Length: 464
Ligand code: SF4
Ligand code: F3S
Image (tube, rainbow, N blue to C red; front, side, top):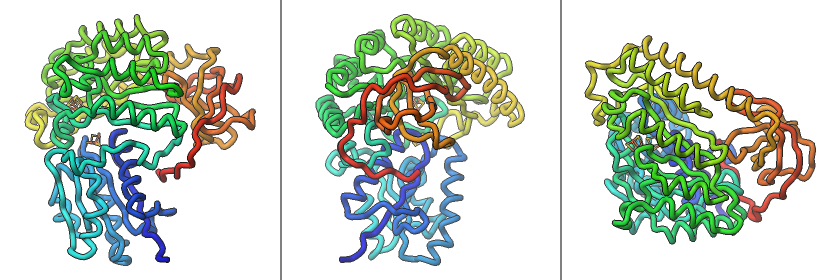
């Protein structure tokens, strides 16, 4: 019997892309390939790319450059490039890296095996669809089909694309318009996942709280989805990312508050605290409106952790406007934040504001000042949790210390604690008392084991 060909997937970008890579792995396994033990020996190397910032593009071309010599040594090795950057650059990838065999986009993951086969007989293949093809779109198939990293936690994409027009963002042009998956399909998928022992599902979408707007004229269905997911027995934790502040409705907050399985965690991207900059970004809210929504969420949701995204150095951002952001950020008391330096993306409105680009040294200085405010806020939040007993879903041994386990609290915080029970394995639920708070994690001591892992199937681990 011939040895199966092997594949490796290298993923750049957001959780949506991570999840796409899981599905891609599932598609490759279904086609008879096996995951390579060692990426360097794989028969097929697939890059699932991101293009949110310029350095994401540079990272891909640098990785492709490193593979050129390997391809010369092993011409039978195939290289495929998919995802957001492939969707944007299309044939340019084959022009710049002639040793690439296949380029596919965000709408046709499921085509990858056929394209790889065709490339072996007919040479390089390029296939980019401008919109998802419902027929060919098996890449929207249930996550069960996927090869997941954690057998007890899963992502579930509820919508693709985005109908917003944020001035800096390239996502709508590479992921297309918003398309929601049918509610029944999602509930069926979630039930199937729980049937295999999944106890935590993170719902993914570019703007989750507009979920369903394209399905019914009666408005978004996101709150209904949360409540319906909360009815699935065995689904202990539901998280979601990302809601858009302008679309965060009271009914979503109510559904969060009234659905026990929905975790007390809200990722609400602020981007800037200056109204002029928010307007130039086309975000659709003011700092005051954002803070009102945040206060409403905090009032309704017991002990909710709030995280955000921030962009530094948007074209035209003055020192005074940056200081306004710092004030709003300090008042918002975020648990943590993803901070980004503005990166112009060709085809977006902000990329044309060249005359207003901010000098690198100014942006770097602002970035450092912002980080200080955020780190201080994160540290205070974490220190305030010392002495609390948190429910932790154990993820496995700590990456830094074998004698420790790591897991996530219901608020989504990373916590490490010493192994003091043989009954604890990845997927177990435990109560852990917080003993120390650092800006990016908590430390604790095991109080009790709540339950053993539930997952029944052994799912191969993704290589990172
Ligand atoms: Fe981009 Fe704005 Fe859509 Fe988010 S909401 S994906 S930032 S266009
Ligand atoms: Fe995500 Fe990057 Fe695409 S952030 S949606 S992988 S451009």
